[in-house]
Structure formats: structure tokens, C-alpha cells
Amino acid sequence: MTHTDPIRTAFEEARATLDAFLADPKNVAAVQRFSEAAAETFRRGGLLMSCGNGGSMCDAMHFAEEFTGRFRKDRAALPAIAFSDPSQLTCIANDFGFDAVFARSVEAYGKKGDLLLAITTSGNSPNILNAIEAAKKKGITTVGLLGKGGGKAKALVDVPIVVPLAETSDRIQEVHIKVIHIAIEAVERALFPQNYAAR
View 1 (cartoon, rainbow, N blue to C red):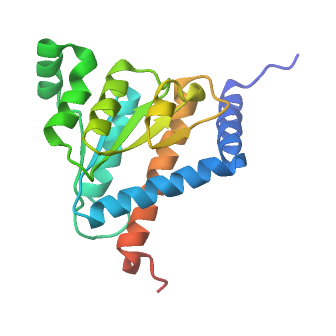
View 2 (cartoon, rainbow, N blue to C red):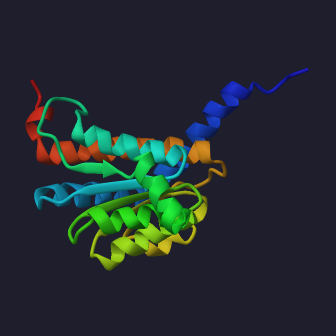
């Protein structure tokens, strides 16, 4: 009797999700738009902001730290921040409710010409939707890393990037982190081409 190998099955599901993402040229084009918008934000002296819940907050933090630290090689630090400070989040949640935690941070730190990366696997997290709305009011470019059809966020953000096929957050987040790494590399290649010059 043959039994399904759950580990191999998980890898195959992950591969199928990535293949489905790459099969639609609009997805790669959206990642290109994201990368170009982020690079242009830095050129103008703007700030990249990111937010998400749970695993998506981890991805938001990962996104920001790669810019303030180092991705491939040494280069100047770039201004990026993830809304993840527990004292700020719990203060805002206590005073205004959890749905306001990211919107208040956008109001505090964001300005016209900045960029907000909003990450939600459902596309419907109320605190993410509120952050997007707050960003739009301030003239901040919005990018959504989304799943499950994109939810309400798809129509709100300037650049929606929606993971197809996957129905679970883990498979969606696996593509999200690939998009994040690829966008960061593209930004570095645009701003620090010497770091990628053939030697």
C-alpha cells in the first residue's frame, strides 16, 4: 500500500505555487514595479515602511532590516522601518483599538513620496486596510503582498502582488519572502550597481 509522503507533497505544493506565480507575466511585472518604486523612493530621500500581522510581520521586519543592514555586500544604509515595536503597537491598540495600530504609525512616520509595503495573506486584515487608507491620504505609494485573490486590499493598493493557487498562509508567505528578496536585490542593483559588477 502506497502512502503519500507529506514532506515531499509540501515541497511539491510550494513549487506548484511558485510555478503558478511565474506563469502569469503580470506578477513579474508587478514585482518590477515594486522594485522601481522602492528604488525611486530612496533616490528622493524617502522612507520605506512595512507592516503585517503574525508571520507577515516577520516578513515586514525582514524587508526593513535588509535595507538598514546589508543584503549582499556593504553599501550605505537605506531608510526602511517595519511597524513592529511592541510598546508602540500595544499603546496604540490600548488607546485606539487593534485596527488602528498600523494606520497611526503611517500617520506618525509617513510623508508624501514614501512607500508602504502592506502584507496580508488574506488581503482583508482590517489594520492593514486602514494603514493603506492612511497612506493614500498622505500621497504615499502603496504595495500589497497579498493572497487568496487579493481581498479588499487588491483594489486599494497602487501595486498589488497576489500569490495565486495557494489557499494556506504558509504557501502564500513562501512566495512573499521570495518577492521581498528579489525586490531588494533589484533595488540594490539599481542603486549600487558596483556591488553586482562582474569581477
